[in-house]
Image 1 (cartoon, rainbow, N blue to C red):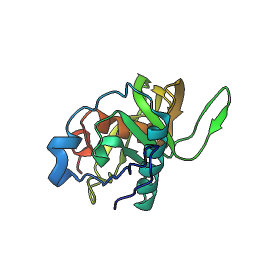
Image 2 (cartoon, rainbow, N blue to C red):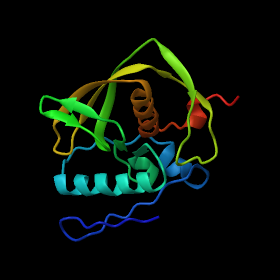
Image 3 (cartoon, helix red, strand yellow):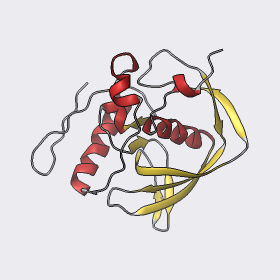
Length: 171
């Protein structure tokens, strides 16, 4: 599925989901590069396009390298808040870094849009602290727990070149 909203210069952003079998070496097994230039128009459009694709296939998170873009970005149905209020819905996380992981962990089955039909058990920390950038380059720090922490850890695994096949247990 290709989705093409227009950027400032009327150039379409076209993305397509990367699947493990044919594209792993090029996209999913390589660590992504940090975003250095925060072009608000481009990142806003990328957020919109990735969210649309993710929602159209029933996902809860999608990393940029899953759509062939080698940048440390993911979108997820994970709310967060700052001093200005709560950001609900699907948010974009740029250059995310987990600063803390709880020792308390939970093992649960996970799926992945790039590896359909596989649901290994993956052990994840129940709580994390995350530092990340917003579309305009602003820095955010937020604590997450439960399923939101799980989704973020899954997407950051992608950004670090790992999939559920690398971190999961098939039982």
